[in-house]
Length: 431
Image (cartoon, rainbow, N blue to C red):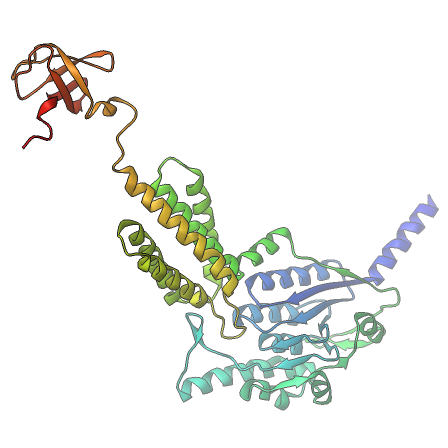
């Protein structure tokens, strides 16, 4: 009994000493990233990790998401280490704020940070504001930086230039300027250098890191988070939007197919979710709507391809304008725009032409198929008295505006229930 108990106690102590959790931010700071980091901080607290390592490489992102991440870092019960890596990576804009908020800020050789001037954007594009509003935005950002950076021991005056002058710093400049704590070329060396280090937390408490048997455990995004983050990619958003429109268009023009309507509805709802998070430009949406109208007109009228070509151009321009972040430049790529626009144009024109052509087709089923068919009178049809006609091997009750003798050839004008309205067959086409 004693031996298993000692073994379990040893494993428990070893696990507690080896707990270092790691997450990676590699891309734009968005609400999905914020949820991921907040969940990772909570997990690190629950597991009483030595610290949470955030490997950072980002061009920036949404201000509200940045603030949520920083609140989680500043209020974390375990130390947070931010490490800009690998070489060639950067922590710009929102990434600069997050880097300076960490208990330990580290950078790899060949990285840079800064360029944190806030930008006001409407419809996905930067907006020029007057001098008063510009000062208000800058003062708010610098005050926010000072509110936590001073307690982290960062050089406030130098850090503010990243906001006021959009200044950027290499890893060496950041270290010399006391914006970060260490420059190290690998995660292993970073962990080794932090072993035994006493860290002063944001609330004034101290924490000494014991990393003698430290093992780094990566925290990955859940399937749900990866799925949602994929949806908010501009190319995927554009594809979902077009698939949604095409699916519903197909269902409306060909009722009863069901599958296109279901797929289109789901795709459109997912596109609306992404639209809520992305900086979508209204002009891009209008151009895509105009393109759809031009494709439909191309099917209805003879334009020798002019309307169709105009629709392709409108959709391409709309796609390229649809999403444009002023911070990252992220948007729908030209390859994705071409790959979606051309098939969409062809399918829309073909479907519309089928719909228009079907309106002139003669019905092939039911009583409607009798219209314009010819037959023979088997019982006299008087002007006010129904008679019988023989059509398709069947006897039908028939009426006519003119008297028709037995043996006369007649043509069906229309069908009214089980009664045929007929006329003499030889009268059609006479002048």
